[in-house]
Image (cartoon, rainbow over all chains, first blue to last red; front, top):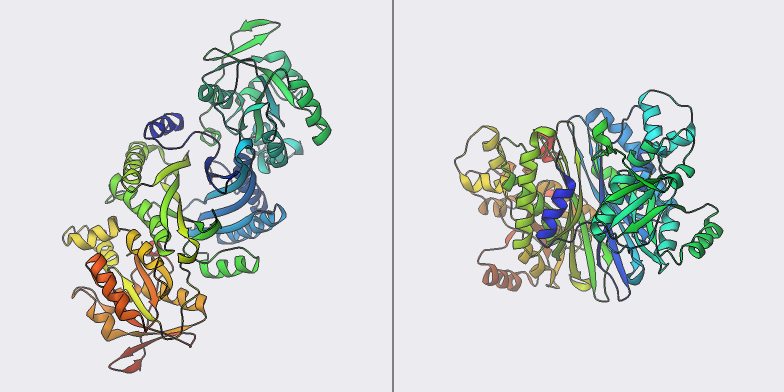
Amino acid sequence: MINEDKLIKSLQQDNCFIGDDAAVVPFVDNQNYVITKDILVEDIHFRTKYFTPYDLAHKALHVNLSDIAAMGAKPTYILCGISVPQYLHEYATQFLHHLTQICKNLDVILIGGDTTSSQDKLFISITAIGIGQKDQIKYRNSSKNGDIICIIGDIGFAHTGFALLEQNLTSQEKYISSSLRPIAKITEGIWLGSQQYVHSMMDISDGLYIDLNKLCKSSNKGAVIELDMLQQHLDPEISLQTALEGGEDYSLLCTIDKNSFELLSDQFSNNFNYQVKPIGFITDGDSIKFKKNNQIIDLTVNPFTHFGEKL
Amino acid sequence: MINEDKLIKSLQQDNCFIGDDAAVVPFVDNQNYVITKDILVEDIHFRTKYFTPYDLAHKALHVNLSDIAAMGAKPTYILCGISVPQYLHEYATQFLHHLTQICKNLDVILIGGDTTSSQDKLFISITAIGIGQKDQIKYRNSSKNGDIICIIGDIGFAHTGFALLEQNLTSQEKYISSSLRPIAKITEGIWLGSQQYVHSMMDISDGLYIDLNKLCKSSNKGAVIELDMLQQHLDPEISLQTALEGGEDYSLLCTIDKNSFELLSDQFSNNFNYQVKPIGFITDGDSIKFKKNNQIIDLTVNPFTHFGEKL
């Protein structure tokens, strides 16, 4: 598989604007567009066996809107490309019907796209465009030493749901729905974008460890994950390993100035009726360290480069 | 196969902005962004057997830039999504290298994208973004009765090249290069966009007949194709049927006010050193008619809904 990180690095050397959840291009004076593109490939990212057309429409859209949310911007438009094998004609028609309906409900306008044939697999490529205030768009590269690292949303749910679905188990609906129909943190992203003391932000799509690593690399920083704190936020069914490795939760990962954390965390709870989850802090180092009972410990994390490649 | 026209109609009923070569979204006061997205699927739109990574990078880019040109806008940014089967890892790396180089040469900035695995076929999805003057962006829906229908560029070349490539023939380089490396009419599109008396424009990707049909439907007009005029513009090797049916030339199709045609055609020749090709005129009807020796004649055209589906 192509190593996306290496690729991004080589493209950056070519003076391309790549590396955040979404690209930023100028709009009017005080606003920018943010643009992202995510692909979903049958039997890599989803199976039609357990994804209904509605589930897939929901997921394909929210995976992209999550990137917009992670920049602190408001989703506005999408384009949808779809390549359809003959035998999934009806499935794809249903998919597109649901996609337009879900867009409408979210005030997102479908402005274009492309439909083609495919030999055997369904391929979906969505481009999402959002609008953000220039001074409220958040990047990965601006975390500061001492920042509190926080998760906004669940962690390990989607991977647990995926494992159940692959075993044909349909109990534990909350995990399964996280895998089939993750919900982009749109209003949370916009609110966090408007907070000056949120220094950096991204979404967690590839897994907490691998994504925090990206944020740290982009900021030229290191991090300490406090495993006791992380454990507190986990459902009993979800192991630390799943929390660190499992992808596709589409929760937000942000770093907050340590002096503002308490106030901001309280305001967040008041607004959204759930808690920000602090799990550690940014350091001046260049790697992620794990702490348990106040001691640095070794922990082997095996991040997968893409969720789909485990299928 | 999903019928893209029916789909577009159903999306338009849902108040989505769909139907031109590219979608138009606001930029600053007097400018708009135009945005398009085209997918290329292995063994539907290309074969790695005869497309080098360079060819494919060129084609994937120009197919998208052609949509921007057809709106009278200047290509500015792209995003590239690519799903890669294991055995094409090196091919895809080369593809991305060439894509960034070709973008650089065209002053187009690669701002983002997505790379994923694929089980067995290579999928490429490019989103291209251009900038156009609001009053110079051309649409399909504004052709007027009596307009001269013109082709800018070659016709039937790409289909002829495709047929040669499928038979493992590599003579007649000009046709083969049209199929492998079509060149978007970028400067021509911008120039035509700036001309008030160019009433409507699109690119010819699916074939002259099917694309003119789209333009007429969008404008609520009909057309007459003068077969003697069309024949004059064709290479001896290219039949009328191939000219009408063959897709993927990425020439431009535009309609020009009949009173301004001669002047505009002369100016075009002076600027670009080749001729605009008039082939007929727009009518108040609702269908495309064929004329030969000044008589309306019957002609059966079998447009394919997508080039690729013939593979």
